[in-house]
Image (cartoon, rainbow over all chains, first blue to last red; front, side, top):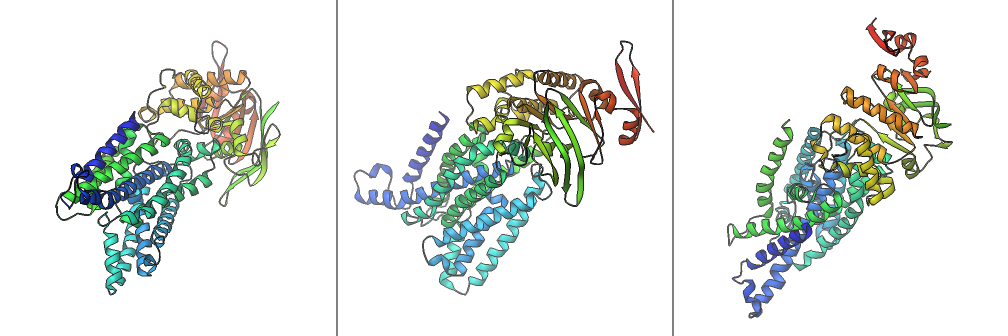
Length: 323
Length: 255
């Protein structure tokens, strides 16, 4: 039922997104016009698939981050996971690796996401072995890591500025969004997303047990160390794949699991599946807004998700502080 | 029959020795109260019994098998661990939470038997109508009882509880101790840490008193909780008084 509703919403978002575009064609033209068909199937649809996959992957990563940190405010953009992916990707542009093969950029982004998640986890858990990470520690560690990684990315980009070709490719990527994304980008994001999602589904029951506390989970025969490694790996695959294609798109991984929890409950299995669908829907809608609000020019989708997500985050923080 | 036994147990956390050559055994079908001043090592001792903290030397054996070399699965089927509860991060229902106590059996796919066991334990801790409440909306005392229900739902022979009465009012605390006594009478072995020495005196079959990481007294409450041992461990002056109906109670004064 809930799943059906979520799928219906996704379908509606997809149709709405297909309807609108730079060329003046709509779905009603598909049957009678060859060009309309080409525009729909070869330009709009592939881009929408990329956007939907990115939203799905970031949302699934959000579910995993929140489960691992046992904190509903943890998410890839707040913890610095996306920033880690961005820094590694900027390095790939700087070193010229990004142009070597289609998989070098996602691989770099994956490595960056993995390293930053592991570093943040180590920072946040210092001296707090058996307690959930206090919110303040988590957010401050994420803030510091984000700032550091962002500075690294800026440094690499400023070093790149003399090389016009590389720097414009890097900048274009870094601004994020799905402009100009097409069928050739689908494998880059789909492959890590599917792997990450498969891993996440297997982890879901153990994340439920972990919600009782690390100690209790361990006493229930959950192998914390291996579970943690697998979760880092899954988050890095999901965020790395998405970041490699669309750059950092903030707040999706925070907002979607949160909204979905209120309709699906907290169990990680259901939450993961529904968040994945809802994430795709939300990203399609944000992308639609980004494409239409200043038509014929496009905004970066990250601007829209930030405008939506940052106030949402603040509202959550304020609600959490209330006694 | 000994259900769980610690022999010559040494636990170091960093450079500090938290437990020093602790020997203690816990008989099947009894309630043992672990008492001692703050920082005496009660929680560390319980965690080591549960196999969660590794002993630097010595061993913990459950009916002859070493806890450190058991598989996590085997251990989870033998003992349940109930730490003092922390605020739950996500709004699971009480029933979902209690069912998670049987995670080692169902691995995330609870069956009808798991649900029945969870409902039985909820009834046992006096929360039969709480199944569909959200854990994020419970009071501290209710949360503590849900944690106990979760431990009981595992249906293990051994239940280890860290200060389960800490956030309970006097009536709820007494009901919990009576429940634990009933479980012991049915053959389970209960070890719990307690700060309330009067409660330990009255409800435990056996008391182990820790002081600075060592066992300073052990035995039936009357033998372990004596004015001399209490003065040595806590630095208080204790008296035992007899009530009109013939029961004994502990009273404390600062030294």
